[in-house]
Length: 407
Ligand code: ADP
Ligand code: ASP
Ligand code: MG
Image 1 (cartoon, helix red, strand yellow):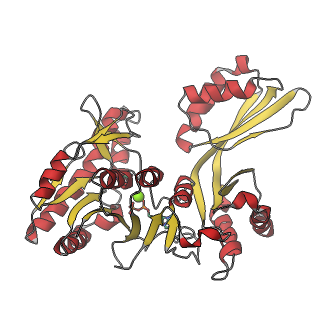
Image 2 (cartoon, protein in one colour):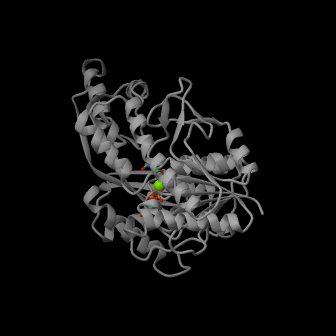
Image 3 (cartoon, rainbow, N blue to C red):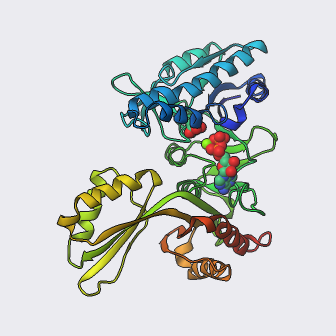
């Protein structure tokens, strides 16, 4: 007997039957003697639909009003699920983010959780009530509603699990667990029995949306026992933990693909000290997150600096640079958002140069051109054309995982 936090994603609560299915999973856990806190996402594509609705009214709506709107999706699924559990005869209460004590900073649309005041949740659990909490949302110091960024319900669940010191945090989704690549786009992707926090964090950060990357960071920091599993199949899922059994051998744990990438190239910069500093401090001032950076060799006293950003930041970054054209002394800015980043993740990569060669060979054999490369201790990323992204992920995956147990 213990305390279990269960999170259900959008497709798991998409319609009435699926809500009843979730209610069954929650009540079965409760019947086994556990205290249960369930965190729910909005139904199906609700959040996308709300974004589209806002765009019809005002494409430049303030971020505060966007959060006011987006937070409603989770409120619908939670109240409906509580009603389903009521109908089954169990004690249940649904709570919004603020009722459940989620206090965040004021970065509307991408708010960070500062703390969770769980008194109300604990009071309800003490009464033996099942608690359903809206994912993805909290309130800031002005008591205004904030949201945590797309996919943020995972982080709500892990935060509650951390503060409540839950025995387990289960992330129920529409696939059986974490795979070696997105099973919807790469054939032959294999489910992992377990994965380390660090590898999962890299995969999530590099585009594997199965977990919100901040949820993995938090799970690692607070030692939350995390399991990713299907709300449909009833099978055991993937355990995310500090040390995985397979840790000792050299291995590539997965392939990730991020299609939310844009590349800016600042062409014809003067080849002198301080240029990189000026460009990237400008990006920092504009709150633009920069990822892969490439600087060309200086030639005829000029050089180019290219870098990648999230698609949503491309225009803002371009405008900020163009406004400083004179001061920075460049020729022009070239942008391209028809690109994607494909990465492999695994422990100990830096000590095995053969891994990079194998990845590049797979791309070469498929005649896929690489635009940029970035490496770290546990990942190698390449930038390719968006139209080649799925094929690149597939051939790289084939190369590393073509036979069970062989990498
Ligand atoms: P939810 O609505 O439950 O939060 P998401 O759509 O956010 O679900 O995440 C689940 C999806 O993540 C899967 O349907 C799958 O297409 C995608 N995905 C990407 N990479 C992976 C991976 N390595 N393992 C499993 N799923 C992945
Ligand atoms: N409903 C939100 C989204 O679609 C949060 C989530 O599903 O985790 O991004
Ligand atoms: Mg998700």
